[in-house]
Length: 199
Image (cartoon, rainbow, N blue to C red):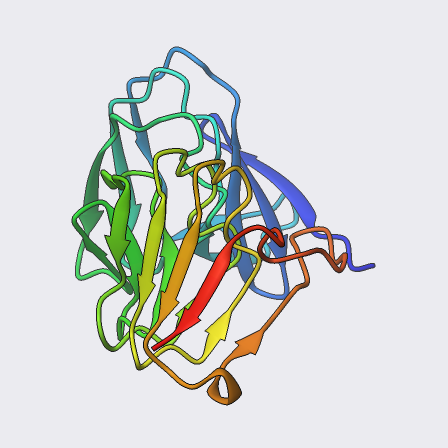
């Protein structure tokens, strides 16, 4: 496997590799405001652009400032931190609407942790990819509607204990089911009892 360099900067640990860095851990559980910088440096002066956010436990953080360089908010992020106020420093490279993180072009749905996902949810038309862990732990979600634009569905539904039906408004032959999880293991994307309707 490829190992990244771990860099600690201002109470946050980053995983840095080949010029890019991902924020992965907060060390100080009393911080109310966290500012993620655009760039960090290691001890030898190598610079890394912070383009990913993957912190799952934000403890008591009330306000999170993300740099314009963030291109991806991983689905696992914000697992414990649903009351966080998100602020962007500059024009963001991700799209954040109604508590959901998308890629900038809104073709990829990355994270729903800060959204109010009820018993039925319809993904917006135009979204092509449901990323890994995007709907993780949406425990109330019973019916999920996916648009005709959908092309790829990743391992995104772990902990969706109430999910019963997935309606897909596209042809079965147009969908790629990517069953590789965060740990690079093959897993079931949806349990067998979930009904999939192609409409």
